[in-house]
Amino acid sequence: MSRVSAPIAEILLAGPRGFCAGVERAIDIVELALSVCRPPVYVRKEIVHNRLVVETLRTQGAIFVDELREVPDDATVIFSAHGISPEVRHEAERRRLRVIDATCPLVTKVHLEAVRYARENYSIVLIGHQDHDEVIGTLGEAPERIHVIASAGQVEKLDVPDPEKIAYLTQTTLSVDDTRDVIEALRRRFPKIVGPSRDDICYATQNRQAAVKRLADDVDLLLVIGSANSSNAIRLVEVARTAGTRAHLINDVGDIRPEWLVGARRIGLTAGASTPEVLVTEAVAALRRDGVSVREVHVVEEDVRFALPPELAHMAGERGMTLPARTSMRQSI
Image 1 (tube, rainbow, N blue to C red):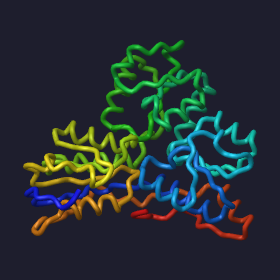
Image 2: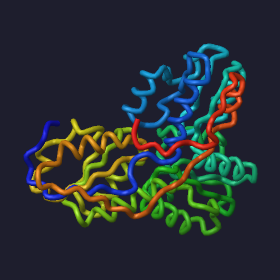
Image 3: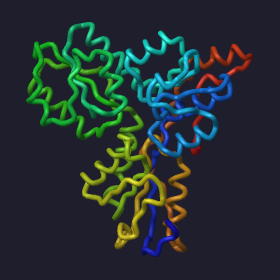
Image 4: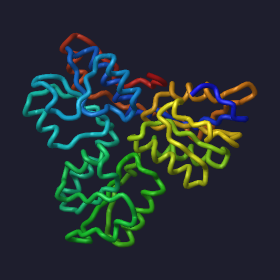
């Protein structure tokens, strides 16, 4: 989109927005693997759900595939941030692939909870979207025990062998409000239901949704920058619309439609947890004209970092290289 002529007075930037610690870690893992592993380096699925991120890493040498059968035996393969099922892990072991696991630690937490509940003979309700990579991976931990639902309306249709032996888990990128409604419906139907000691919805998802709620009453239009297959970005649009604010999901500045801007004096901008900050910068540049102010609205500061996987450090050690203990706090790609 070229510079626009809408009478915009102010642009409000949500804070926090964009990359979370799990995404930063996953991108760092691919970049470091490209520097310490002998090529080729394969990545199963999109490392994170963002086209620019994937294309940038592809130009650096990463080879993205949908399934392990596309990876040659004995090659290096990175698992995406969304997690994998045990079946995929076992296939990699059987074929002697050199594996680097970029699964977000917060997703790994949900997997471990699923394994624990399954071992204790619980029926498990996984709140999430059946076709999302994260849910597919978690479901694989105990497919015979896990029931996937996405809404409170599906609770009444659940059929479990023992209503007093039931637990729930959630996809990490859901709407906090929608998940609360589902959990309340579960508790009404199954009073003995148990859940994780800590909320499964990740800190970054909650913080970005809180920032959107803060902006919603102050803007005429909210633009959420993120990919169409990014669950957390889609949820940000839903949160804004639930608050009564016009909102649209855009992949980049080229998706902005001039008719959206009609009558929009104050525009809010945010970005999903897989979105590089450069896309926000480009949107601001396209929308900003003389006299248009830009203001950051922060609800919380984030300083979370995650450790790199030990297998990556081991591979670096084989080549006499030393890696940082934790990931960087990047702003762009």
